[in-house]
Length: 115
Image (cartoon, rainbow, N blue to C red; front, side, top):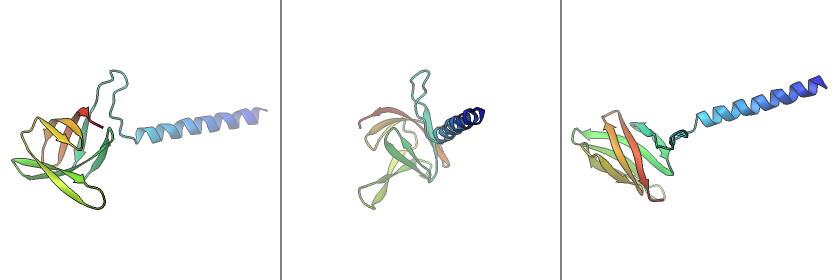
């Protein structure tokens, strides 16, 4: 009987531990305690899913602009360019506040999602 209880405890702990590992690998864009959206930092050529929209930072071709990669249906993709001093942008059906942008990464905060 003790062996069966130990086996159940081991399985339960393994499942809970595994679930924690899975959840810690997800992009959690919402702070559970305050229900406020977190900022999302994306490095060059990195793609992240942010509240249903895929965002990939394509870098800064010059000091005056930065770009985000937009995928169209099928295999087409193109860059959308914004002035580097933008405070708010519209991309893939959502409004974002630009917290910071530099040649290596961009930090965004979702303001409103149209989806």
